[in-house]
Length: 584
Image 1 (cartoon, rainbow, N blue to C red):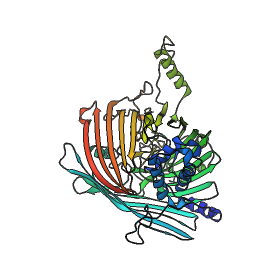
Image 2 (image 1 turned 60 degrees about the vertical axis):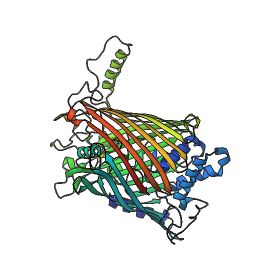
Image 3 (image 1 turned 135 degrees about the vertical axis):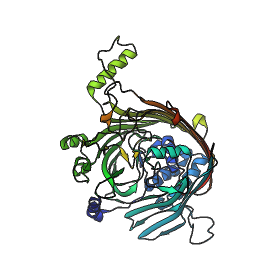
Image 4 (image 1 turned 180 degrees about the horizontal axis):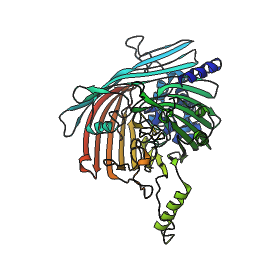
């Protein structure tokens, strides 16, 4: 795969255009941009919000268009403050370059508020800043101090205004609340969102976080990104297509943006941790390719189409490697899979977003892993009986395991009840059993290499499958530098007892299922999670934040030994770092 990338770069080298790197996922910038997209949809000509991360160049262009017509936009004072933040954070792309720092204590550092050090010449641009996150907390029932200690740097730049580059590297030590340790144990020791780690002192862990890539524009409308990072598809808090929950992975991304269309090709190299190749100490590789087509039917209505395939040639006795059939950027993957012999895991999906009343946005996704029309007839028959439109069932069975799909539906509401900068979000997610899982294509008793996962973590929802979830998010920014965030999650899912497979664990072979029919949502050991996550944030300086956080989480199970109640309070300081998400 790496050879193909460099060949592609060489062939395109003569036609490069100005490039842009991307805003890291989970930055506060995403809320600001999506809020402006709902409030002023006629001004967003650059960004398809279902495709993340966003390019810094596009963000700068969007917010500058709001400023240029500020009398019509009727921006609040806090909105103007946030626009100023976005311009400072992306100052290399602003037409009227963001103002330098008012006070420069030690030249040449912090000449601009967003950068510890920056340089810009005709041929070269470079910015570097420290990354710091120190969070200290206490968990109810524990006498041990919990903490996260993160130190590192973030750098970005460009060469000849044609090749862009980005690097993020941190060293981390942590002693975590018990529910995070429990989730880590479920992932064979992998910390959610991260990769390899080792034990630190008595109860802590030590790990690196590393992201980096290069980017360039092959033509005016086609940009290329290659490196190690995460991606996200959808408009929700969650994504059932592709989320940022799993560890960083190697990828090549081709993104075509023309007229009202954004078309993305994503070629990923994944690791099937903790499986080894057998030939060395390397973890087994698998691959995935994704097509996503996003179309703005109007300034307010967007619809997207998604397809994905996961394949691992080593499982069938073949040499590990990328299958060239899936390099075709426009073909229908199901047809390719049939051509190759039906061993690979193909999924389809759609997503949508509709902004209305300059205050509301209705969005959602459908993920289709597999379905059978005959089985759907059985389910429709059962549904008609339940609602009283039919007296008795015409089929003896229903709820086939083959009907593997998920659904998301959500609503965002900004400036709730006319209160400036009070924004809310309500979202429902449901995924049927055995979705995202696959079977042992080699029939050798080995774990399936085609599950929709990377580094022992789901590539979509953190729970995996066989669950339903309701979540709510409230964000309020009453003053320039103060923000309140409240999140609530209610998750119900079916877990496995010893030696069973009820469809929630996506790493298991679905041919070892409990039954073919009467496969119901949340079957198995019923477990429930109620979680509240409250945070107050004060912005000390640009990209320097102080946080006060409280997490309450209560997990109950039909197996009482799995019950876990968590009450955790922490205070933290972060610099050029987004707050960690513990929403699982």
